[in-house]
Length: 582
Image (cartoon, rainbow, N blue to C red; front, side, top):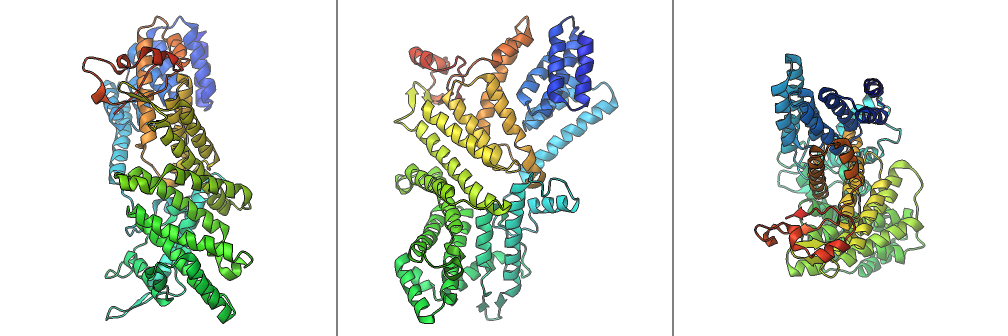
């Protein structure tokens, strides 16, 4: 019977029916009357099927059992290495591939494992050499080149809805590229150093591109080595203010109302909006672009001041000229411009809060400010919906809601660990469970709204898992299932956006917990007379809330759990106690 089930499982595997294959291999293992060699092969095969479904932790458990049953069989170790590689545990993948290579039964098998190990090394080198090209001049942007290659090959994913995020980023990229090249071609510089700026200013379109999708921002290589395009961009921003006589407003710190009074008078005098519209658009968008450049270079507070200055003018103008059409007052006063400008302010506030190291800096920004912007953005998106034109709807409707949801999740998460909400017991700091659970839900909702090819989707899913672990009461099986979902979410974006690092805080935390749980299960199964049942039982166990434990506060010779009040621990949901050590 086991032999028949194994054959059926293999047939399902070759038909890429991974779930069916897993179930058949499991039935074969439960049928019994297997030699260690046969059982080891079944575990290895089930691990392979689970890898295809991104269930890497379960695959590693199967591979470990295969290695135990058949310690001289190279494929069992190669399967384990493959799972480690998919998890980007490159150190363990290389180490385990070396074990497989040393056990290889023939030259062709050895060559296959060596090739797999070589790919892991290449990835390590690629990520090590990958640097941000946000402000520096770059010849091309990888994601745009990849998208255009798919377009050229008539890839069925293009235009199907599978690459919505990529299409928005490429749209923004091409808008910015065109404006940058116009700036490079048309800016005139004389021998004596005087500059004739481009008019109308390309800054207007650059701002539009950034607001549509900041991932599209880049600075192409300029044609003039003496004056790189990055420098020309700065010169254009300065010239725009000077040519349109806008510097005076900045120098005297004019309020939005004072500034708008002057431009209202200009409209009355000229009897048209042309000059006022150009001047206001240049001032608003130039301030926004200046802020974006400052933020990209790490000056978050300067960025905030620029963003807030632009928003002050936009909101005052929208209120004052509520009956004036956008054609007259300018597109900078559209609600979509104001909405995405608020998103940039909200995200900059979040960054500033993260970076705050002094009391003065911490008093400058607050969770309340971030949450107020987030709630305002969400409410505005509900009452002012955009049509379903794919790129604009994603850029000015979906992304603002998602970013606002993430920001609320961030605020809830931060509050869950604040002194007035968290519980400190011995060396362990426990997050407030209800606030942590609420943060998890916000991140789940944010991730669910994003297109499948958006690189932010797996980040949100991992943030959600991390707060579920803080809240506790989640089963081991549910953790592994959600981790598999988050890992699966990393694949679609890589078709265009390319390989991305897996080394971000929430994933690192979740992986540390998953690794500890897997180690616990491996120990249970290795000492059990029925390892298959031991694993199934372990998947039903619920985790207690995972605290942060300061190693320096753990007494020598003791485990952290021994220093937490036993009565308190009994009140916590779940039974398995793990921690994050710092």
